[in-house]
Structures are given as C-alpha cells and as structure tokens.
Image (cartoon, rainbow, N blue to C red):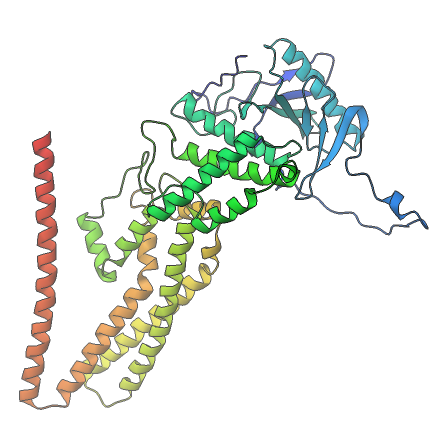
Length: 493
C-alpha cells in the first residue's frame, strides 16, 4: 500500500486539506492528526439532578463495564475518565471520542464512515493491522476528521497525499525523520484509546531505551534524553509488570505516553540523521549570538557582565526551540534563590545606609549615602517584582517553559535584554555595597587628620589600580586568544 506522505511545503499557505464528499450523503471527511485532538480543551458542563434509587435494586442501577450501543459500537472508559467508542464489526476497527449517545452525532459518524468506505474502495487494500479514527469536527456542517494508524509499523497515515503544512506539522529533513513524527502521533492515539495492549517486544524495547537514557544522564551533563535519573527509575518500576497487568488499559496508557515522548524526542533531535543532535547544547538550526560584541560589552558593564552569563544559560536551555524540564527548573530555582537573597541584602543595606545618614556628614558623604539607599531600594523593589512574577516558574512544564522563553527572546539579541533585567537586583546590591563602602571611606577621611587621609588614599588607590590591572590583563588574554584563533582559521582556509 502506498501511504507516502508528501513532505514538501506548500507554496500557498491557505491551501486546505482535500475533503471527500458523497453525492447521496451530506457528511464530508478530511485528514487530521492525533496530536490535534481537542480532548483536553473541549468545554463541558455537568448537569446534576436528584436520582431515585429503587429499593433492593442497586445492582441494576450500575451500568455494565463496556455497554453496547447501536450498530456494533462498544463504549470504553479511558483511565482518566473520558469515554470513547470502538466498533470492531466493520472491515477495520473504528474508534471515535464523539459522543454516540446523541442520534445526530451517530448519524454524522455513520455518514462519514460511508464516505470513507467509498474513498477506501478507490485506494489500495489496507493492511489487517489498520485502525480508523473519526470524529465530528463541525456538527452544523456535518464535517468529520479522520486518520488511520497501523499497529504493525506504529505509524499514522491517510488515504490521500497531504503535506506537512496541511496537517500542521513542522518541515522535516527526510522521510526517515518524518517517521518519528508519525510514530509520535501513533503513540498519542494509543494513549487516548488504550483498549488494546502493547506487544512484549515494544515494552521491552522501551525499558532498554529508558535504561540507556538513565545511564546517559549518569555519565554526561549534556544528555539529550528527556527524562531525569529519578524519572527513569520511576518509569522502570512502573513498566515492571506481569503479563496479566500488561494487558490492562492502564498499563497501555502509561507505555503509550512514554513512547510518545521518546518518539518526539527522536524527531526533535534528528535521530538517525547525519546532523543528529548528540549534545543538549548543540544547535542544528539556529545561529549563536556573539556575546563579544562591543555594544553588548558596553551595556553589560552596569551589571558587571552578569546578564551575559544569564543569557548564555538561557541560550543553553532553549536550543532550537526545545526545553528540558529538569534543566529549566534548576535554572529558575537558582534565579529565584538569588533574587530572594538580593532582597534580604537590600534590606540590610538600606538599614545600614539609613543609620549612617543620620550622622553628621559632609556634603559628598551625604550624597553618597542617599545614592546607596536609592540603589538598595531599587534592588529591593526589582527583586520583589521578579520573585512575584516568577514565583511558580520553577514548576513549569516543558511546553510552558518553551512558551515563556519564546516570548522572552529578542529577534537579534535573543535573551540579553531580559537577562539584563534578571541581573538587575544582584547588580544593584553590588552598586549599593560599593557606594556604601565609598561613603564609609569618605566619613573616615572627614574625621581624621592629614597623615591618615594620605595613607587611606594610597591604600584605596592601590586597590583600585590592582583591580584595573587585573581586568586589563584578562581582556588582553581574551583578545590574544581570539586573534590566534582567527589566524588558525585563516591558515586552514
């Protein structure tokens, strides 16, 4: 059977998927994907009312586990509590999560299946391991979406050629790469409709993948595996079940959900491709930001370069649009801790500054005291604002973290602007400390004789000179290293 999917991007973005319509029926069907489900976003309102329980008839009130409906449909219950319906009396099994207890919905689904039957009659014969999913997309227009899955190859497919743009998928680098996207869709389908068990071979392969991922994290700090060491240990315990437990929909749902993440991980990291990502920080799509730009050096000076360190950390978190939950949470936990520490230090500096300010001071010393208090107050306000804004950021999921980082990044400077804000509390505390120390130094000069003043100026000047020399040597070494690297690159060319 030819189930090749065209992966070439459309020239016309507004071109819609082909819809097939029966002349004698009103329903239409068109391709959708398993990951585009409205399962978790569908609005619903519970209608509750009193219920009379007949005497001595409580057993009759409880419905059977899998009640039969019209025309061979069997109702199933997902472990999360959602209902879905399976019909195994047709040429291939059919699954839907449209509520078939309403006659209108059942009629539209039936019409859609007849339209699909006409389409399938014109297509190559489907393999016996095929399963059809269909749902009502628009009840008013009597539109149905559908896709097919093959349980033997763990792939999603359709009866006609579609493009990645038509079904809302990213562009791919090869057909082998695209298979992982289709496998993710297959496992998402099985997670939503876990009425049939996963084979022993696939369950055993999943255990091997998780063990390798756990070992990769234990031996490398830049592993691309999506689960942490504790999570791997937990999953291996969950997957260690006997053959009877493995047949349950609960276990099938767990296995399918983990497999779905593995398939997406392989798709995102170009598993098996020549440009496969083997390191978490390796970029295969986006260029890096040049942090040695003179302009960036100048704007980084007020915060002592802390924004560049934070920006580099955020760059390593958000590589080619991907975020790992474990690393994001560790990064945000450290930021929140630093902001809370800055808040406490700012309070202490404000108190010290206020105490010194009430002393009889010279004009310069008084201005320094006011500047120190203003700086520490700014540090306090900024740290409080950041803690309140990101108080729950350390609990974000991967998708929530990716959305947040996508909103933060600048088109040219990526995370440097937001990193400047993140580094502000710590930098303001540092400035407040420097100004406060200068104020104390000024107070000492104001209250001592000339010999002591000269000695203090010499000591202070020597300290400043040492710091300036250390900074100059560091910059010269960086420039020398960059020049030598450029010479090596030019000699290679």
